[in-house]
Image 1 (cartoon, helix red, strand yellow):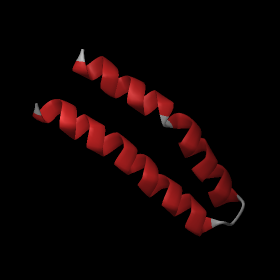
Image 2 (tube, rainbow, N blue to C red):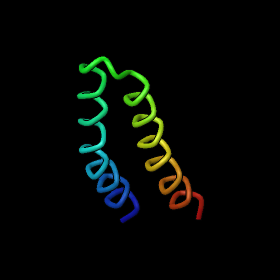
Image 3 (spheres, rainbow, N blue to C red):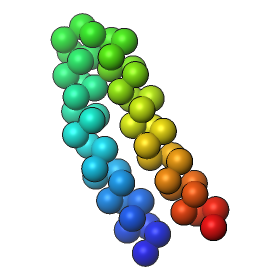
Image 4 (cartoon, helix red, strand yellow):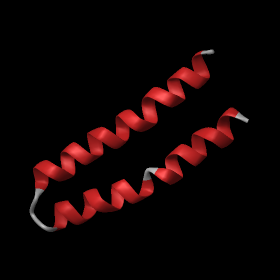
Length: 53
């Protein structure tokens, strides 16, 4: 069940990653990097908390 939830979290972050790709192509690299960092934190923290229990 934990893996299903982790996959669901990754799927939900797809929209934000597409925004980061748009920002990168639009030459707004700071926003793209910030979005990628935000998505990474949104994925890493819940997954670590689930797997650590």
